[in-house]
Image 1: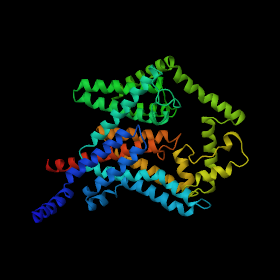
Image 2: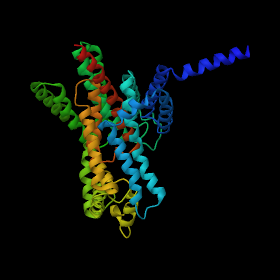
Image 3: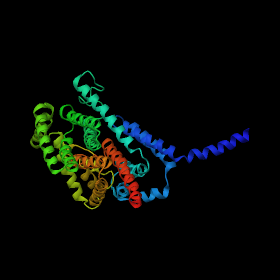
Image 4: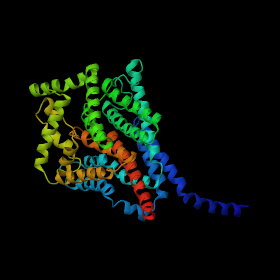
Length: 425
């Protein structure tokens, strides 16, 4: 009996490890859990990300995996991470703890090529997209509930209508979901599925309306017009484009006249600038202008390869000596992705950063829902990174990683399956 049991065990173990389909499905579920938890929790994202990598290992075909890493869409994130690691070597007068902390914001980009590899082989990328949309919808409905009934407050310290995270992160989620829903509605209309298309259209409008009336960042109001133009150009004829633009202008006028919140958010830009200009006051606008001014100076001191990984906060601390007001602020994030990279790795870093954005834009240049979602994610990240360092921020950075990785894998999967069909034809 003992011998038979050991024989059965010996035969069972290899079959479990070789069951690639089961491991792939488990890894898919882990990514779905990342998507669900991303709008709500930081720690859960990290936990599920580790679980995903462990579950993925038995499914990897290493020759194909290494070949996949050579693609520009996969290689450029790896190159940016490698630059961050090597950049620790010339970060003079910076502690090694600060240098290693400087690598951390870039490390999440390593997940992009692995996600692309995984979802090129898995057929469940849509699961992840729907999970993220459902989770963000729950946040949006909770936000509306807080707005309607002020007694529904999870944390009194948070802004009204922001149940978790912060209004900047929430706005990035809502903008991505809104335009992903609009794109999906167009494709469903073409497939004669009007009910689902209408539902997604209403959902997208709900996300936008929440940002207009309840809570939003000012950055997202820079992103939305760009995304509207791209949406109209991508999905409509010239006549349809003009009609949609007219409708958007009319809707914007109605939103402006009916939303005191929107008018207040825009009016604060001028008042904050005046306070900074007149008295060097610490305001959101003033801080950004000060951060950019100083960052440009730091870049001019080391234009080719920068000051090294993790050097930004030390440079701001040294420059703040004897300063007051906005000029005395010390930060490790200059609130502009290009400057954040240029301060640490100079022109070389900027070339890698823009190469990555460019290759990802090209990856999503085709038709289909996955290509549209990826395109929205890249454009939103690029535009918002003019006013923030969203690629290196945890929440916004993971939105980019998840969207580009999953959608990129889906696009390549469609391309790979289309080639044999074309050959047979």
